[in-house]
Length: 429
Image (cartoon, rainbow, N blue to C red; front, side, top):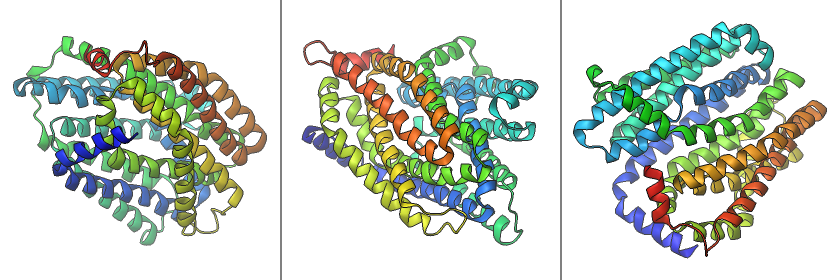
């Protein structure tokens, strides 16, 4: 592990210019997470349960609308010649607008079927699809800015939008006294779209640069990541829909605080903090060595994350009010689930950094682990509701960790594994 730490330290020293944007971006993500808590406390558990259901459906729909084009932009824009970048941006933006709008329309036309499957009404489905489209445009335009290394601009925009969303939520709660979920969903949709529109200042769009061949190449490049994202969105998003079907709406809101908030908090720490150094380090490291070290660190990662989640969530729960009752047992279950989830995410990231081969392995693991995980969630949530959901989340991740650890141990043997260079070559194909 020391070699990884040494590489991370040297990489950090070489990229000190990123410290400012990273801190601003972290502050923006923290502000967004805090806004979620403000809304949850202000509107109550039942309304926040509605908010959570809409967000869960939107996260799943976003996978189909975005098709991992943002991931492709992260890779291709830095490598492209300056003169080729407008074509990449224009093609990606136009293709995503067409696909996203098309799926939005199809989703509304298929509302009689989808509402029955998802257990929601048409209005809820419409909000979820609108939120998904706004999130798609937000993530895509952010990938343009990051791919073009406009780090200061993207960090500043994220912070400005996060502060605006917090201010809007506070105004709706304290001045207007709104206690329904929809005003806050509208505010979230609007802030996502504002970010997308204002971010145009950081990249160039040339309508005549659109290329059908380039669009096919972009979607082909992102196919593996899309498959991973789709499977992950289902296995880690359907629990809320199951709970919405078998438990009171208030339990959905409470579950989101126990389970969803710790996940978002760790996402902030990883994406805007540790991930800045860890991801580039993993990309250039010998993969069999990385996998062996991760296997040895599983207990440490699990324990540290579980403790962090337990302590942080306990502190935040003290601010939530009586509609979100604190339970030591429920918090312990949540912490266990978050700990195992972090181990799975660590393996997922390491495999993703091995190009096509690692992506295929991860897809195979998800295909094997998802059916028993979903069955576990359905049975336990139908039987025990909120408690069953927390237990099912931990068991689902445990199943996936067992599958991915077994696959990694077999594939990444020191004698037959490809080197980091081979993985990088495969990633470019």
